[in-house]
Image 1 (cartoon, rainbow, N blue to C red):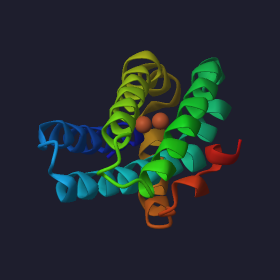
Image 2: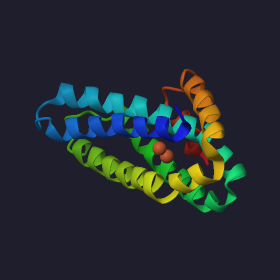
Image 3: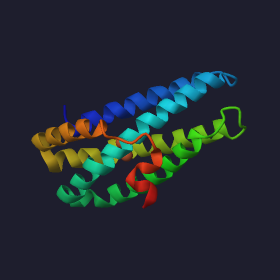
Length: 157
Ligand SMILES: [Fe+2]
Ligand SMILES: [Fe+2]
């Protein structure tokens, strides 16, 4: 396993939840609540391990990618605040589906930039062994990830 493969697997897990949400009936409130709770859990843990381990390593060891990382942190900031709002929003609220739709647009845009615009540069700059080390660190950090989206560092930056 290497760090980029691990992160892409998380992205796939989240995309599956998005697709299930899009397929859920408008009145499937329990199902939509459950899916959004899973999105909150997955995305909170994912943004946490990226911000605690992957992004700082990339800034230090692949400085040419720094601007992409800074932009990514700003995108995380918006995403974790949306997650914290969704945590307490009733799926029957007229704003619920709209908020999830905008969350999905933001995350898809973010994932597309990570995977296509800068992860390939990181792979070139950091190499296989280093990416394997980072993958181990991230897998461990996942166990310590917070449940609360606003506990992710970018929330307060
Ligand atoms: Fe990210
Ligand atoms: Fe990511």
